[in-house]
Amino acid sequence: MVTRTRPAWPWVVLLLAAVIAGFLALTVWTGLCIDYVPESAAVSTCTMAPSLGWPGAIVVAGISLAVAVFSIVRLVRR
Image (cartoon, rainbow, N blue to C red; front, top):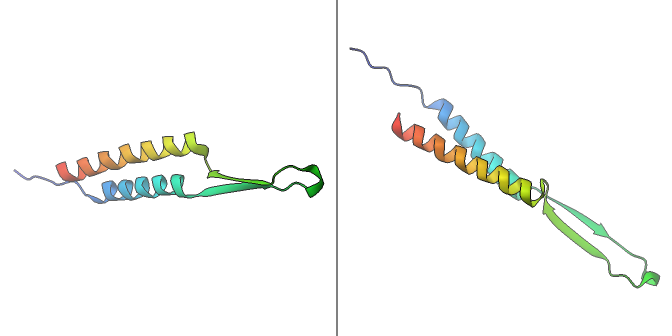
């Protein structure tokens, strides 16, 4: 009886893609600054947040984590 082992590379590629997607979702930020003229007496403000927004970044990171764990389980059980 011949047993064939399945290749590991698809799971490694999926794992790397999931890690990169999760990393980018949390580390790529965008900012916005609003500058007011001194006569308006308003304070200039700057804000920064993930490019996908916090809800989007958390969802993408969560899905990436689940895919990464699934890939690791499949690699270990092959």
